[in-house]
Each structure stands twice: as structure tokens, then as C-alpha cells.
Image (tube, rainbow, N blue to C red):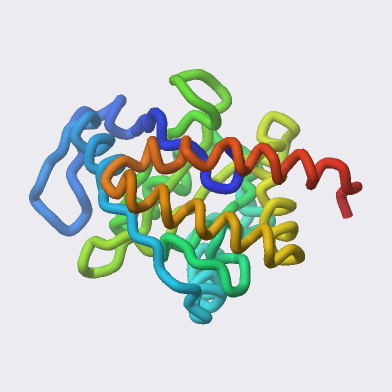
Length: 221
């Protein structure tokens, strides 16, 4: 499950330490369980390709570079379906951010982005609540609609499947017929699981595995 990682279990380190979290800019307080339930049950929509998506990525990339500690940030990549030209997608820009230290990320990056209203979760890479974990943010617009998913991950072999998502992106870009098949699958899954992000993501796993088997037959650039 590589390009759009499974929403099986989300953990908020802030919630674990401090109890219910006060959302920036509001007086509402939510427990960890309420935050998780809201995140996985939010409605899924599939939109036609929007040529503004690359620019939305670039704007957010510049914003992260401007407000976060430079020594913690490495490469920042646009991945997922919004990074594939012409591909229908959930209208949420996925970003893969290389960080040098996850523990430092929690102490030095998380407070900055939470203060700006980003939702933060300490998230397992695979299913169940087991390592390796990574830092995940949801950015929302003024109407509280998701606009970006930001995955912060170290550049290690432990997280190789995240980085292989870039090869999945490139394969779909180079093979429009496969991208079209993937888009049709996502549309069917969206219709069947509009308020179940876990089921929606799980339904793509066989297709992704099949494509990644082809990708791995080609030497990495």
C-alpha cells in the first residue's frame, strides 16, 4: 500500500502526552479517539484533474521551507495521484518530506504547524500500531476541507516503501493506460466507500501491488 498509505491506526503524540487537544483558533477540544474517528470517516470525493495541483504543491513547499527548521528538512516531493498529469484524484495534494530526525521533528516542527492549524498524527507506516512510525499532517482550508496531506519521513531503508511511491507516480505518468485503469478503480471505490477511508485505501492494495511488481522490474533511476 504505497502511494496512499493506509488509514488503519492514527496516533497523536500530542494527545498521548497532553490529553485532549485544543485546536488552534477554536475553543473546541477533542479526544484522540474523536480525532481519529473524524479523520477516517470524512467524506471521500474524486475530482477531475486540476492543473492547479502542481502549483498548490509548490506554494506549500515554499511555505514549509520558510517556516520550518532548515536543518531538519531534506527533499520535498509531490506524490500520489495529484502528481500524475491528467489523473482524477481526491483533491488533496500529497507531499513527501524528508526529515533528518523524527524525534526532533516532533519537538521542533510539530508545534510550529499545529500552531498554524494543521492536524497532526504520529502514524504507523503499515497496519496496526507497530513501528516504524512517521509524522503526518492534514492541512485544511478556511472551510475545514482537506487540501494537503504531508508525510514527514526519514531517508532510511525502513521507509523505503514511502520513497518507492515516487516510482509509482512516475510509472503512472509514463503509462497513461495504467493511470486510467487506476482512476476507474478509485472512482468505483469512492462510490462504494464514500465515508470509509480505510476500506477505500484497502481496496486499492491489489492494484498497487501489481503495478509495483512491474516497477521493481525496472532499475531505479
